[in-house]
Length: 383
Image 1: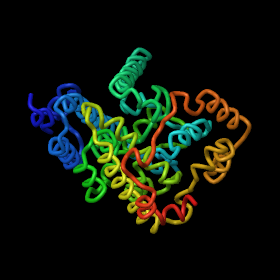
Image 2: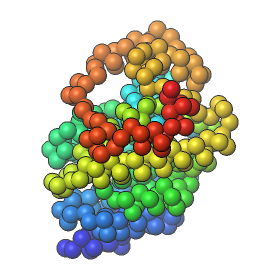
Image 3: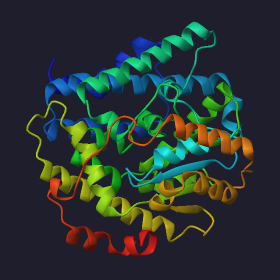
């Protein structure tokens, strides 16, 4: 099958319908994003072997979408299910968002959904322990496959079947996530998503999926996380008007080459001659767009909507930073929370999966050009 046929949206949709028996994928607002993603994969030169591996993931996203639509149709009360005062962790990729998410998830009054559930938001009515273990095994196999095709990825972004993971899994079901641009060299899609796309429908569907997950596993105050929220704070707050965002800040001299290294580790799959200087330009453009979008959105937000945390303060004292943050978030701190946080940190020491090495010059970037682009941000949030 040709790459064009493999990525044909109608073909992908038909395959999802055969898998689920469902043909209603909700309003058509997801179609432009899928079309733009597929077009960029083809026009930006993605190898056919990689396209062949990606297509089943796109089918899976459509299947998830159809099942969420069916769940809401079967249970109309889901649309009114309240999820009050959620917390969303964000910041440029590689700024400590994963660590912060995991520490906030330690709080017994908080809920952060594990990776295996985010990959399959809807459980069938007859789901039992065997179904759960089959889904967990499915997720473990995905992580193993990722480790095989990108051996260095675990050093950059460790993941676990039962660990909290990113909201990007829900946004992918609308094909509107910059994670696609981190995973694949798709500059056309990236520029469209950060410069033209309206992500309000995607975030509205993000909330519908969160309502399904909350009904499936009721818990405390929702804690989500996605660095890519930074590019779309306006759409996030449109869907979640009473949310609080926790934004982490790391000096771009460190964050930018780390982001480039993340992109390179994934873009290099099926690209043995990857141009690291081109990846550096790509990361600079991506981060710059995020800075502009963040600044524009925050200019219209009240002072209590976003809580800022410096990366250097956080890594120097993660327990103290988490304690101060929970006070800002009106989540009471007590000895039980401290013990949970300390236990998590002891079980997941820094560099447990190996040290991640990177530098600006590795990607053809200089401190002067980074300072020129991010000087205002550095002065306001990092210095």
